[in-house]
Image (cartoon, rainbow, N blue to C red):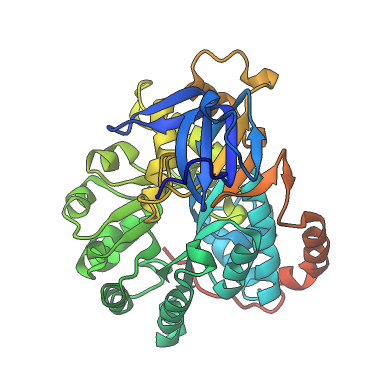
Length: 454
């Protein structure tokens, strides 16, 4: 960005904190007693606290004892589904979908989606999430909340083949109308649900639309090993094989979950012609009792970004990406049988730059450096559970919690200061959403939006 004229006030100066930085080889480090200068919604400089002591600014935050991080990215969620938090518990995947979630989702109104999104955005902002990738229905309502509350989002209108061509057309219409909205804070994607609910003709058509319009694609694929086995039995190829032969691997593609990715899929992913990424949400996999997790180490060896996610709160009960970061490190150690993998610094890399790349924003967010958008969170490590600090990266990943986030900033705008939300009224949302619950939760009609039979 263009440096400010000498003596010109900054929009925001954050000073006295430790700042997470990436070096030229993308290794994580920390600059102590540092300052971040923000102007025009972007980081102008990361410098020493002393260098900005007398620099004029429209707003200042003294952050002594805190750590400044790039805002976290929730790379795959269904924000409105916070309305279903705790509704379908201790169920296998098929019963979770068919007996509870898909019948209830047939009741969703635009107002339900709006209220759920408001509550979800409040939860994410309080947890240090500054950007989320959402894959759901009635997405104009989601976009309106994003525009109003100040968060950043990558949005796609989901569709099934059972909706006919109209579903795919609505997804395209949404993506074209909304991309670049909210001053660029909203980016968009085509959003076929999954290879088991969208047929190969629709997937191939989606790939063609993505190439024709320069749009990315966001979908579920190889969510678990059962889906992979079912796909092999029905189609002769894995779900990743379906993505390959329909041309989706030649688009910019965000794959949600991928715990069913097998060794036979790796060559397909390696030669993919598009920018392929995977979003991993480990808490839900543990909760469903799935035997495998996202093969982060194998994907990383291929240069495929693996971003962190929560999935929807109906399965995960939480939109806490901080928890996803800690669980990713722990689950990967267990899955690989190697205590040296995944390290705390590697986990922070997945939570920052890799997550930004997963949603196609690796050139603008994910690190704190001149020219990057000023999406920043400040974390307070003064609590007894984070002291003493021998290794700052380990403290952030394994000791700190989302409730230690004190301040959340997007595009230089403070959305939460000292734990106070400034752009959302949670109490009003909870009151109205609670009153709507009886109608939303009714399953006596016997309908469901889809059938899960994998």
